[in-house]
Image (cartoon, rainbow, N blue to C red; front, side, top):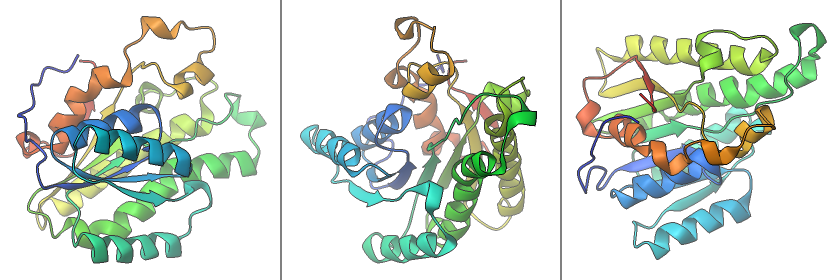
Amino acid sequence: MFDYSAPEQLLKDRVILVTGAGDGIGKAASKTFAQYGATVILLGKTIAKLEAVYDEIEQANGPKPAIYPMNLEGATAKDFEDMQVTLDNEFGHLDGILHNAVLLGTLMPISQFDMAHWGKIMQVNLNAPYMLTRTCLPLLEKSTAASVMFTTDDVGIKGKAYWGAYAISKAAGDNMMQILADEMEMNTAIRFNSINPGAVATNMRAKAYPGQDPSTLPKPEDIMNAYLYLMGNDSKAINGKIINAQS
């Protein structure tokens, strides 16, 4: 696993937005960020799941989180603009974003993709992170050291048969991250990186590899060192990179 030991108050007083916060890696990251002092904004489409994470953070005596329900599949630019206004009014700034929400879709040959299926995957995995990041740049610019983390995948780094729109969206997301890192490096204190969680026991992994025994895989909580490192100030010099959470 990623070799890093986070200081106890690494994220104290930081405000961090996590998408897909209701389950899997997003849930683990939200709870971990709160454990290390962050106020976490839980964004997801299933309110009951977000409320469960909220309760777990409060029960662990973490800073009071916030819930922002949003279905990224249908979200428009106006939805993100409204979100930005709400976050500005409530918090005044953002210190970090973890783009974790993802739609796998159906694994199939490119020749069999229809445009509706393609569009849904691109909306959640690529368009939504773009709109959210672009809209929240003014809030990130108010931070002294903001970190934006995109989530990548091995099949985004090297394409693989049948992974179609999912793999392409991940490759494009890494390219977007690199462009943002290059553009913002000179004028802001925002850094942009991608994290590759690797094979982890999540619902998405089970859908992609239904025959794989999840007990042989690390749990989301097991890979959080890399997430803490990229979100905290110990990685201030890291910008435009892809970090493997299990290396």
